[in-house]
Length: 226
Length: 226
DNA sequence: TGAAAACTGTACCGTGGGTACAGGAGGGGC
DNA sequence: GCCCCTCCTGTACCCACGGTACAGTTTTCA
Image (tube, rainbow over all chains, first blue to last red; front, side, top):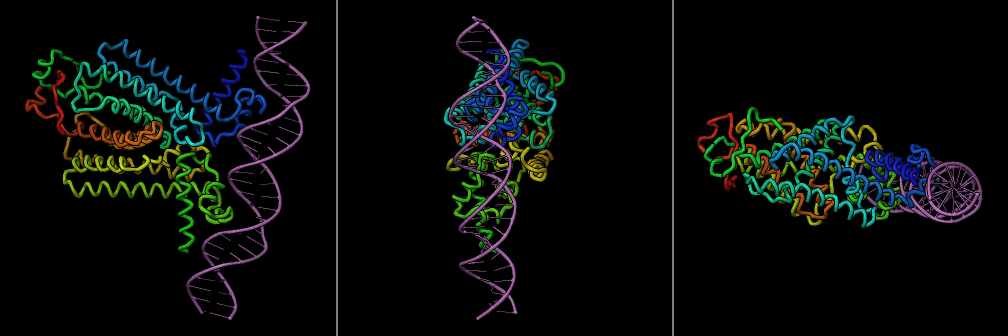
């Protein structure tokens, strides 16, 4: 039982890398079994067909993705008490993590599935949709918390704001991969951070404003701390 | 000569729709010739292999894409004299155009190629890279013009800012397609517009602005003008 | 030690990408 | 009226890949 899981995971590891580079249609089962070091029969013992492989791949990817966001933003939450500062720190940590990926971000499976949709069954499409909705809820929750304390400079819909985080990440990955510039993704995340900062931290300067708001958030020194 | 081009374009039309839904690997030549109403030999008369089809598809897509941006932003330029107002109008027009697409945005071929890269030759990858660089130059040019008149509230790199436009578009497409919510893409573009607006149109209202640069950040009340 | 789990090996099928030609319809230029 | 060129059709064939079927073998662990 343990051995089986191990092999299964090895297949998934190899498959994930291949699929992110070549898409599902471009990845052959043949190459997966060669690289994993098993036989075709062995492969079909673990996954009854390619669709089932995709399902397992996507679920594992989403779980891992969620875990990373959990870690980063809960760490940021521990370090900063203020929800906005905590979120801004989270974005900074995220951008650092992305910048440290040795070969750049390998790609997002959600996007891969999105551009392959019609060949998968409803279940996978629903899983993918739910993953994006989970991002919306995650970041939406954070922005709602922020909005309990801060008033945005411009009127914004919380869900749309939350989606902006996902958009910039997905788009940043595409740009980074296409340009073969690993940094681009990290830079885009920092750009998003600038957006959020500007949206909630009014430029001011004017102490008149802050006083009336029964909260004064002060930051010292240059404008680019976490 | 005219007849040939016509057939070729029909193949490309069918292929583009199919590829955006199922990826290159998921699109069979068989289905293309059935839907186009030609024979296999006919297909290979126009394209010597799938790679050449991809090349033609990508080039046509990019050309069309550029044409659309040219139209939108030059129209905006005609209507507004100020570079910032013109750009903001352009984003508005773009979001309206995207919102009016009957079945939502069909997907971006640049992203499709990006997630399929390894199976194409260097030429296609370079074409794709150049398309993204062209976006960077296009929007970068616009932001540089804006910056001759306006000073951004936060220090930003022009190229990174330009890339933000591409990121939000690419990411918005992925979200929109995955969620099956056509509006999401248009909303994301408007969100980006909000970002640009905030970045260049200083908050306003306090003539005291910048009194003290070693600042006190407060939160202001309702502040939702352009 | 024995049953279940985790495979291997072999053989076979259909589909799809691709090649190789041979030939035919239709139009334009001479 | 003929010829040539473009734009195809038809046929036949090859290999890679996804997938099935199933019999047999090794490994694991209770």
